[in-house]
Length: 251
Image 1 (cartoon, rainbow, N blue to C red):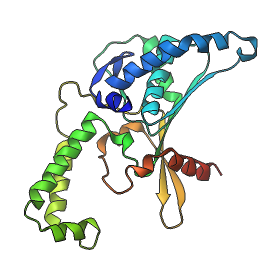
Image 2 (cartoon, rainbow, N blue to C red; image 1 turned 135 degrees about the horizontal axis):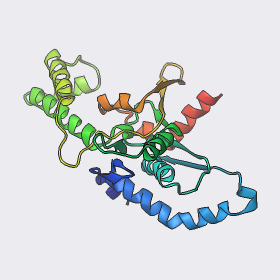
Image 3 (cartoon, one colour; image 1 turned 45 degrees about the vertical axis):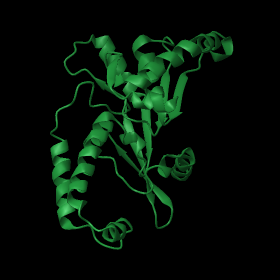
């Protein structure tokens, strides 16, 4: 199931880099079961000039971005153009920093990344779900818990619904923990994964008039951020939210 794939978040070797284990296996399996039909279609005369475009949302986006790398590195569709567009992908890939690769392999991976565009909708939490981000969130939650153990339930209620300001000592504790998180060593099986794309288009919703602003950034920029816990972190992940944002920005 999708949940079981998501839970296999430790990294494994994949195309001369490290990848999300569950999604790397799914990318391999997807090509194994579909490659015969795809390659047979490409043999037809009417499709001789066609390229290959891969897309997906959420778990499918993570798998699509890894399949994009696999197509480039292993030349699965020969010299055809391969493009990838992914929506709400979790962090799934990074290169081995100390591995020696041939120039051809390095160029193939760079080409795969250049041919991929990633989209994130507002406060969607899925693009920040990796072992690293979840560890950071756990440390932050622990810091908050240590400061609120003796807090009255009514005060917690008021803070949650923004009827009362967050006490300054909690804010300072969270800031301190976030700085410490950036300095923590990786645990066994953890890698600094990112979305393997040329650019991330972050579609920010303007709540006052329901319009959107598109902001472009490098995937590596997201690596130093955190999971933003808020009321919209799950609903902003829904496909229709991405459709609405893209429809506004394209028009």
